[in-house]
Amino acid sequence: MERSDFWWLSPSQRSRYQHTEFGHHRPIRDDEDPRFVNWGTNICLIDELENWRDRFQDTNVYRALKTVSTSPGIGEIIGPVLVDIDNSDENLEDALTVTRKILFLLNDELRIETDSLRIFFTGRKGFNFEIRPQALGIQGSTIDQVRKSAEVLYRITEALRAGKTWQIRNQVSDTGTVVDQIYGDRFDYRLKHPYIRLHSSLNMWISTDGETKTRMKIELTSNELNKVSATEIAYRAEKLAT
Image (tube, rainbow, N blue to C red):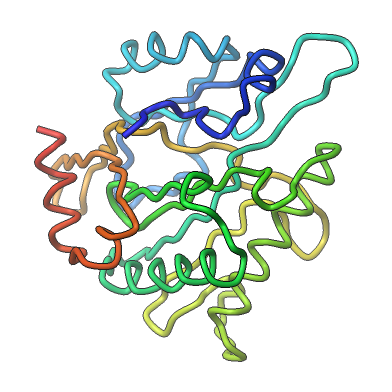
């Protein structure tokens, strides 16, 4: 499968939007709050992505969801549209069940074509969908892009909740799986979660027993998502990281 983290850009967009911010952090302990972990970041040409990967051994490396142009009059583009499914207790079976439901919604209700959608196991707590913004009619100013992306996430979240309520507003299952509110909240539209882990990179963390664990962020086909167990997916990601 194509590794390019910028697969969602059209050829004309690829020539216009050439800069983004890359990020990296050390392995985080289970008892740490990730919000207070120091990140190293740098604004680079997207063609320098491989150099950034090499600098940090392809481990805990990210890029910003914003890609910018240095040409006058050209703003920034946000993408891909990211649906981030997490279970903080690492109940991957439940996260997988939710992810399968979202795939059905994307295919059946939003009519997303196969070539506009990619699916990933993030390596630890859940799964990502990456969607080509054009497939959802998302364009315009930065605030318009964020607002329209937030509306897509809201539609998905409400369909999954099916009238149920939990204490956590973006929770979508009884077992605690959530759809991260990346694009905004009840007060405004903004990128609350501005980074995305790089494709095929290593997710490394320190578990409560002090052991350092590593899995690879791996891509899944729709068929694999629907047929392979969470245990097998996690095992595959762990083997690829060694």
